[in-house]
Length: 385
Image 1: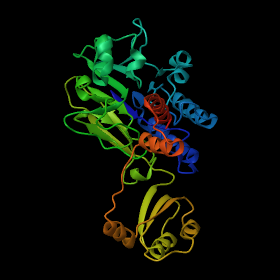
Image 2: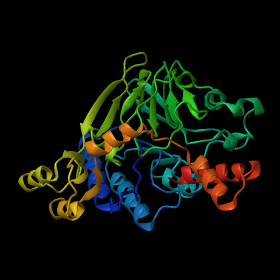
Image 3: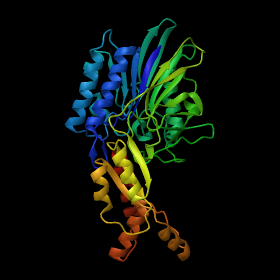
């Protein structure tokens, strides 16, 4: 059984102030070309189809075109999709029944009643059946009517109990598709600026809940990596969605399952973006010279080290780098001044900063009720980001 493992398309996303529509359409066409050439037995998309829960018409059209082109490949390739934390499960499920008739299977929501179960898709190859279990992004509150109350306080137990309800036959081959923050074997996965995760927090899922599966196709983190074990993997994004991802090499993960008990074979199919994301650091004059001598059509983050004051550095850089993302300054004299003053930059949470603001404006403390309201607001903002 050979299948593509994709995740975190984030259709409709902007990189700083640049619309990535052209970049995303370009890379989706390359993925379609790989599918047409290699013809995998399935294509798995592990969540975050869109960048917002209410996607733009432009983003919806892009995904529709992508699925339409995949559907045109013969023989048909089943496409298995789950919702991520950026998606609206209800919106994805809306046309699920119709798409299922065309071998496009969508799981937008986890089970919410006792009679509901995870969507399970079974495909066959020369070694027999492979069962794909589709587990969309969840919070314990989503499944409160399905699981005992004591289980709902722990993400690991929630995932474990949901899977146990399905009674997988582990003598056969099973694949789990999931979109959560997984940790395990004492390792914390590598994260990027474009991800919002509570490292070490209560929303972590330990891999002990899923390690019996023959392959676990994960979405949520933007860098491709294994989590604890070689067969539990994040495939990463198809494009670089933040400056912190500049060092990543983006690729399409092709997974091959052979007979039960044999090691999973992985192949990274290199993707070629329309524009790369790069970081440059140095003197303004050197960076400008480099841009005139080499290809300067990529997205670029620049850190300038000039000690003297510069005349309109952004404008100068934009004349050479038309897709300039940001300009930062890194001056030795500024660092030395801070060291001499013995100052430390204090990192404060958004809630703490709002409490300070409230205290300064109103001359009183926010209070427990106000703090709880702000926590809820910040949680909602986090889910939408």
